[in-house]
Length: 456
Ligand SMILES: [Zn+2]
Image (cartoon, rainbow, N blue to C red):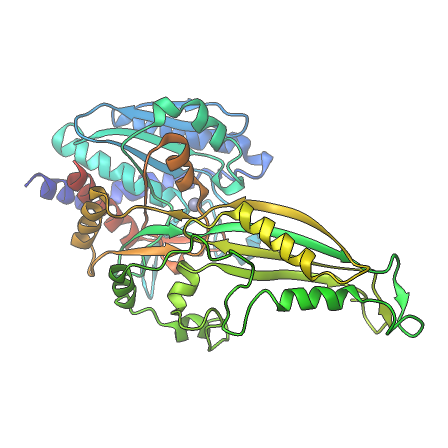
């Protein structure tokens, strides 16, 4: 069968594929630091040349920031888009690295061979898994089994300022049948994963003002309202005794898991004791009756990220403060509407304000959750292909964080996204000593070859 020849080619070509990744890793494409602008450009050039060597018509496309790399390859079958990013995070603190972050090395560790460098996992190693799968396919068959568009970004680690405008301007060109996004992880080293749920995020900051100046608590204490007390009461009332969030309408659009997904998650063997034990905790503190995995993947949250007010310096001061403020963030799921929640949250706070108090709000971003329809045929085909490569069956998993690009593909291009990646939890992305397991790289390439075969 034709896939076997491709897989064999991937196995024999692995040393060369690793060398090519190392070349890309040597380019310090730190997107957030203007000092590395030319290096970002160089990384884009490297990718243009590499894709061109595969016969992909590729261009470096300017943006107000770092360039996009866009390439097209004609072919029969479905039109697949592949997204990855070639920029990396800064490397500080440099002294915590065992070696130069841009001098990649293969290292043997107790858990296997790893490629150590900034960007090894996030996202150069990941994006090269797909490129190498295409290379092997081309070498064996002379052409790819589908039509392909490559879309590689250089600003992902600095907030993607050019991404949405670029996608809007080039929507007709980028529109495809399916967008493959390689910037996520495995569930663990045995269980590959397709991430099908991403939580959205809403940020709110509120400042409550009582008296028009700080007061002496001996002179005014008792008679004057204390805004810290008011704020504390409001914060305490945001959750009930069962851990549910009390903002009116908050759970509108929060779906229940299907029985199938519930069973799948049960089967993952997630160990909440270990998960919490790693950070010195023992009890899941979210909604009663929900598993820890549900709490971090499929349930919404309301968390206080910071509180200020009154005297917080050394020693003691009997002040009765004029103001108290808090930063509160919400992780959102399903079809929860961030703007509606913002409105209801602000109304709830207003309703709780006692006389003589005023509140000011400022918003810090509002993005909805992503939920991808796994009932479409490509999802089951890709899941089967992943299961064929890894020891255990692939799972549809959630991700507690946000990956805005996935939503952009759906909203701007009308292209359904699919998030598949081979990173591991201990890859130390964004941290010193980032690594990518050689196994992630090798089996990642093989996984894409299987997925290309399955989707074509
Ligand atoms: Zn990334």
